[in-house]
Image (tube, rainbow, N blue to C red; front, side, top):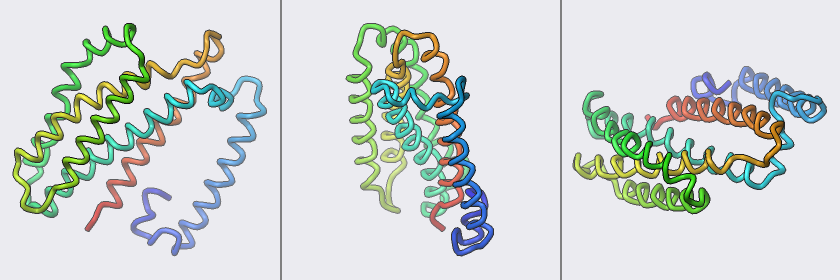
Length: 203
C-alpha cells in the first residue's frame, strides 16, 4: 500500500482501499494476539512503563526527523538547485563526521549522565538545525547547506544513544528481553516511513 499509494492516487484507488482495510484488520488481529499470548513476540504491556514509552517515542521521532531529512534534502537539491547526485551526496555526507567522532564519547558519557537531559539537549540541537534549514531558498549557498548537516551529526548521535539508554523498563529479565520486539517493530516502521517520504517527494 505504501509503495504504490503515490502512483495509484492513494484512497481514490480501490486497490489502496482494499489494502488499507486488510492492513487495519491484520493490525487488529496482531493487537489481540499479542495482548492475549503468554509469551508474545512484541510485548505491548511494556509500553505501560514510562521509561520504555518515552524512550521509544523519542527515538521514533528522532529517526523520523533524521530519515526524512536524509531522503528529502538531496532530492530537493537535485530538483530545485539543479545539483547533480554527486554534489547532493557530498552535501549530506558531513552528517556522519560528528556521529562517528562522538560515538566513543557518548559511550563513556552515558553511564555518568542523565539520559533524559542528553536526549533533551539533542532534540534542542535538532530544532536549531531545522530552524536553520527553514530559511533555505533556491539561491542558498553550499556552505549554508553543509553547516546544518554537519551539526546534525552531533544531535543525531546524542539523541539516538540517549534514547536507547533510556529504554529499559525494569530489572526483570523478562522485560529486558521482551523489549526487543517493540524496538524491532519501530525499526521496521521507520524504514517504511523513509520509503514513503522518498515516494511522496515534491515533484
